[in-house]
Length: 211
Length: 254
Image (cartoon, rainbow over all chains, first blue to last red):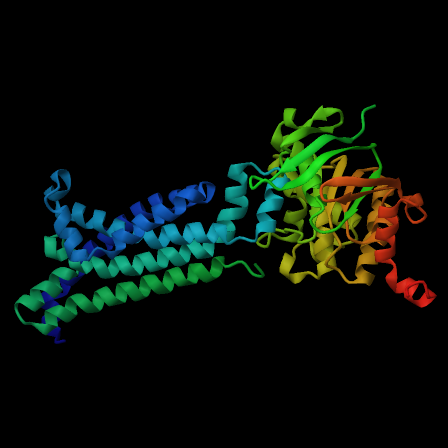
């Protein structure tokens, strides 16, 4: 990539990377705020676990371009492309976080949970002192998968005009300019790798030994 | 004075219709320990768990100090009863001192006070706090883990202690050490103890009465001192099953 190309597009690449981060970050925030409490609730009402996780599963199987397109005609959402992108990305991020929160808590040694009951921990104490700390690395693994997925899918959001690094890719494809495609794809791939690495460090740090 | 624990016609039937406990009645006097013996599946653990309402009887009543456990606040009831199980159920993400001091911690005691209390308890169960307080459960041997489990159960100074095969997974020598430690501790602290065990020797060593269960029924309730000489057929059968090794060398087994 020539320095001339960089000086011409550098500012834009930076701008679109920020947009990309904003879309992904907002979606991850929403998805986390929904999935962790929902996952915890499912451990308290396990009969709902299967249907709820199935719904999250179905959401994830919808092709992303189709999901963006389906959301386009909706009243409030359709007004701003970024809204559509964030809602769609949130939908994709739900499953990994939800599934890992649920499985992480359900997978705790039953004798530990039994003793937590028998010692007289209240439901809240059990959750914050025992269940969440023991499931934390598992939940982080879900956040990690979801983030990497979101960074990837967010490139498609440019198709509905939501911006992000996908815009360079789409423009590059339309004008048969591989440099533009790479100018979008390389930062997107780097973002995914960095997110994966950083969250992976958290995940290992939170892992409980001898569990 | 009412007995520390009293079972009144306690029955428990699973939702599938299996009767695990069938009209069980007996009392445990304050400051004594009773061992529950019987086959696997005879209902020992289920009965034990009705005391702290980990299991709710389908009929009958369990009284603690003369009051039905159903009328007591569940959290308060449980915090006032020590609970020790074979698997220990230690919290793997917490240090030994925080494990031991969990009940004071959740009861809102200031952290340094509950930690100090935790250290005293560790000493009481034979673990030097200077060496062990900051360790994690996975860094301990089976016997040490069980000691921490016991310290944790004693933390709220509960008058009642429920123990479900506490030493069942330990080798005989470690088990004997634990039994000595517990025996000395119980003599000093005057707890009321309900002990589920498969080990007749342990039952004789640690308790004053033995209740023998079979298929959810009490089939014998005898003083520990009379258990070996009892002429009740069920008791004789149990004793024989436990002492076949000895008897083989005395020539009593054909």
